[in-house]
Length: 586
Image 1 (spheres, rainbow, N blue to C red):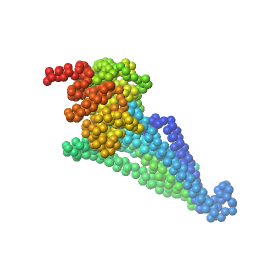
Image 2 (cartoon, helix red, strand yellow):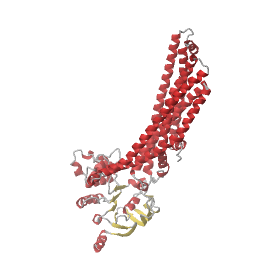
Image 3 (cartoon, rainbow, N blue to C red):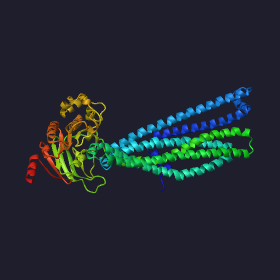
Image 4 (cartoon, rainbow, N blue to C red):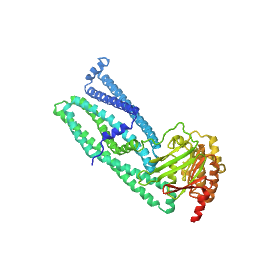
C-alpha cells in the first residue's frame, strides 16, 4: 500500500505557514549552511593537524600565511596549530548551539501562533459542525496532532535540513580528497538509502496512523471515565470503563515499542558500515601504495568526517522515520484548517439595533448529515418587551428554534431578522442576549470568574448587580471566601439551584436586552424551581424573554405560548387557554 510522500507533507506544512514564518525557514537554512561550511573547515584543519603531528615542519607554510615567524620550533608549530584547531572547533560548536536554539524557538513560536489561528477558526465555525463530532476530536487535533506537527514534524525537517547540508558538505570534501573512494561510499550508502525509503519509512507512516487513532480513542475513554465517575462507581462499572481505555492504551504501547526499537536499528547498521568503510579506506590507500606517514593526514580527515557523518546520518534516518510517522497528523490538521473550519459563519453589523421585533419567516432547518427537517416552515413574530413561552414534546424542535434565534444555526430556507433588516448570526445580536441553558457549564474556578466568564477586567459594579438580581447574595454571604469560592469542575460543589442562579447572573452580567431560558429549571425540584422562577420573573421585567419549559406552570406569566409539534408551530395561545385544553385531555 502506497503512503503519502514526504514532499507532499512538506507542501501541506508550507501552506499552513504565514509569509513571516516562511522567511524564518530561510534563517534556519542559512544557519544550516553556515554550520556545514564550518564543519568542512574543521575537517580540513584536523587533516592539517594530523599532518603536522607527523611532520611538524609542514605546518610552517600554513603559519607563515597567517603572519607567524618562519623560525618556529617544531613544538611551537604543533602548539599554534593545536590552538587554531581548538578555536575553530569552539566557534563551530558555538554557532551550532545558536542554530539549535534558533530552530527550536522559531518552530515553537510557529506552533503557538498556529494553535491560536486554529482555535479562532473553530470559534468562527458553524455550531452545527460541533454537533456532528465528539469533543475529544477537537482536543486531539489542537493538543495532539498540532503539537506533533510542530514539535516532532517541523523539528525533524529542521534537523534533516541541518544534518543533510553538513552531510553533503563533508561528502563533497571526501570527493575532493579521493573521488574513487567517494564513489564506493556512495554506492554502499545508496543501497542503504533505498532500503530505508522502500521498507522502513512506509512502516513508520502506518505506525503514525495507528498512534493517532489509539490516542484519540484512549483520550475519549479517559474523558468518559472522569466525566461519568459518579455513575461508574454507583453502577459498579469500574472495570468495564478501565478495560475500554486499556484496549487502546495497550495498542499504543505496543506500536511505540516497535517504533522505538526500529529507530535503534539504523545506528547499529551505520556503525558497522563505518568500521567497514574505514578498513576499506586503509586497504585502498595501502594498495594505492601510499606510505603510512602520508596516510596519517588523509586518515585524520576521514576519521573526523566519519565520526561526524555517522551520528549525523543516524539522526537523518531517525528524523525521517519520525516525520513519516507524523504525516497522518499533518494531513488531519491541514484538513481541519483548510476545509472543516474555514467558513466564516458570523458577521459584524456596526449599526445593529433592536427596537421593534424579531421576525421568523418560513423557516426550515435540518442538521448536518441528516435527511429529515428538524424545523419546517416556521413563521413567528416576537415583539420587543414580549415574554414568549415555547412548549412541546421531546424532539418537537423547541431547542432547535432557540438555537436558530440565537444565530448559532443557519436555516437552509427562510430567515430570522431583527427589526426586519438585521441578521441574527451577527456578533452584535449575541451581545444583546443573555442565555441560560438547561445544563450550565461552570469552569473549575471562582464564582466571580464564572459569572464574568472569560472577561479579564471584571466590572465589580455589574458583577454585584447581577448577583443581587439573581438572588445569589444570601448564598454568597454564607461562604467564607465569598465570590472567590471555587465551584469545582462543572460546579460539582454546588446544588442545582445554585448553579442555575450563577447561570442567570452570568446572563445578566452582560446587561442584555433579550433573555432566553432553554429549559433552565427542568433539572430542579418543584420548590427550587418555584423560587428560581420568582428570580426569573423579577429579572425579566423590561426585557424581551423567550422561555422553553417542560412544566406548563413555569410559563404562566408569558404573554403568548408557542406550541411546537414535529418541527412545526401547531398553535400560538396563552397560558389559561392552554391549561384548559390540557385539563380537557387529562
